[in-house]
Length: 599
Image (cartoon, rainbow, N blue to C red; front, side):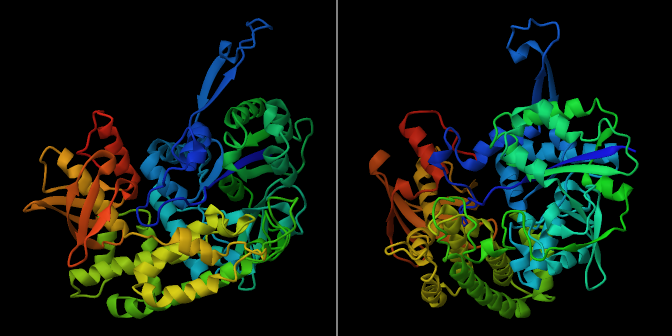
């Protein structure tokens, strides 16, 4: 009886994009790349879709240490390994690394042809700890993830990855209620399995069932932290534990770990994995497969109990994401994460206020229940522009005007920003003034703006955040981070318009044209001796008109700009969107620049 092998890669990056411009700003720590998404894509995600292994030619001299003397083999590992890719990461890949996204789609399709079931499994749309989400938020996150998966991969997902493998009874019941067949969990998250690694069955109080594929915890630890990727032969040996045995019952070894392990955390980890899998293929006693195919082939009746709540990265249930449980990265420092609870409390209070705005306005604007509209938004949430406009027109009440359609789009974006408040990365690390906390606080600022209640609610929100501190005298609080680093100090649309005006004189007189700057469509025209710029946000649909003049050039460049019926402000190049500033710098260096395209 054959032994099955599954390699699952969880692909995800903490969100880094500007919530207004929807682009990732430059991150100097990621050099030589623009940002950490780009660097990790180069080191890992792209390589997994184009993994290269140089097998030594046996005729080569024993002294020849050049691997290139061997026979090169290039493989799309997404066609051979189970994987999930966070939807917010996929949004970035769509824009910045479409070849990588295409490799994932093609790899999944190849696995369907080979095994009858795909390697890709879905995940909640945002990386949230589902046991800490409300039932309504949990349902939307799962539904958005499943709908986005269907749009990307052209099929329904059979499995769903749980962020941080965080699970409780209600979470598994919500997953099962959406028709998902299985999830993957750590072995210590279930009681009652026989250690064979084969699928087991969870049954909830509602009577719903969900299959669980337990991964090999020891193997995962040795691959991620124990240096096992440094020895492909040893890894292949661990992949084939029953190679010299005649099995009388089915067995499975599942490796589940962060996909970034293969190339980013461990250089050339993709090549090591490919070599190990190649060595495994010589053993007929072990068959490589994916979780969906295994579950379909081996219907399980062995029932288990869930350790509820539990997660793969917290020894205290899910306390890491709401309390000072002691889980942290720097084990040499005393646990000082008292800020986690107050931060979650403040964001949950804000979310409640945002939901009130959405429900109140949506009840009068939409042609159906606002919460059903939010769930359906998952069909298009990963897109922008015309797709969002068409969706808004399909859900707004009959006879609604353009202003009401635009408000519908803004309300749906309000919900997107609000759901992002619970992104788990904000609580994972040790300090409250890290980039991950700043990011969710920027989502909070964006949500406040979209709600139309920023003036009324911001002071109260800042007050809620003051308790989120580590307790050290003089240590920053989340309120300090929000005021100093999360709130925009200029209207982003105004800065986009100013950047467009700075570029306009260099367009060779091409006025009355529309181009894209970040997530804004920008129309540029003249009115007398002034430039007129209209900006349209491709997600919220918000439009604004600005007039201004360009004064000076190079380092002394200033844009005197005013919103319609507003006061004139001076905007300088360091406040332009990064792409505009970069084009201007090239111009100053007398380089040829293509200014007529989108930037």
